[in-house]
Length: 385
Image 1 (cartoon, helix red, strand yellow):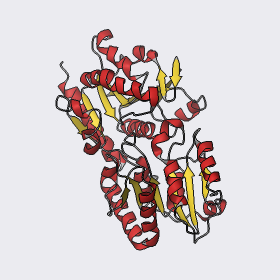
Image 2 (cartoon, rainbow, N blue to C red):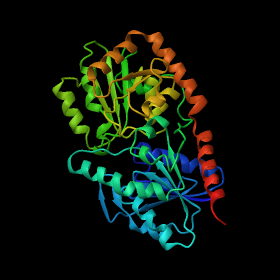
Image 3 (cartoon, rainbow, N blue to C red):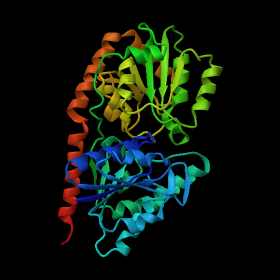
Image 4 (cartoon, one colour):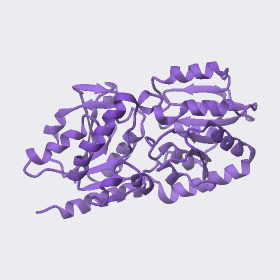
């Protein structure tokens, strides 16, 4: 099959949706399909990386852009020859152009929509997102031949739940790369980060830009500040324009010797950070967090995880089996969960082993993308001759 993936962000930008689209494209190309990715061009240096892929990446110059939204009408005349167009929602400025495909092509491609997350925001942006969800989203869903979601829990409580009676959702989880495995502590990295063997290391990995405001980094800093015990080190790994804001919070809390911000970490380097840590935490504050790939990465390295009790995240973390859930937005509850792992090392190790087994059984990319391929085949089989 000839398949196009439309996605608002793509590596080297660090974000869950782009990461997922990358692994879909990579695995589908390995299965012999002709894959092309269409994404806005935010980084001129990214084109050099694209030559390493087994699939084509088209980085489109946006006519207008705001955050991760980009107006790319040139999509219209680039999608005529595909069997499947896989739209990764949300993609403001890109998704809307798929609505015109049935009007301009005699045999339009079939649309698959992956619903990654509800978009919330604040102020005027919040009003825009609400209006979009009530007007454009229903039309996008109606034109799609299949809707994919990572968890039933999230789709049942999301903006698409009201449309599920007429357009059932196919649940296919996201996965984790085989790069992420348990391994020995990287002592060279530990030395570079000034970590001693007696330090307790808490890890956060995620976007630190305004598009990822919901990750709850400020909440995590507050929770760690409340621990009041020596030897705690918080590693915050990621890139983005909110780093100065978080640094200021750390300075005001006088935690400069406790918290390290680490930027520019590659996917190949990330497993060393997970394996250094005693736990990984995803402290997201609202349902813009729909899954939590970093939790899978930590679990794949055999580490216990702590996450907000949000739809989607609950499908990854089984409370008191492979990690702990805490009340979203509650820094005191998060502090207590961190304290529990620190005080019960054997239990934490048991959570880590359980998480590793769960990843191996359910969350590796190759079998997951096999399910995506099957969804495509079912859609093509239903297409009129």
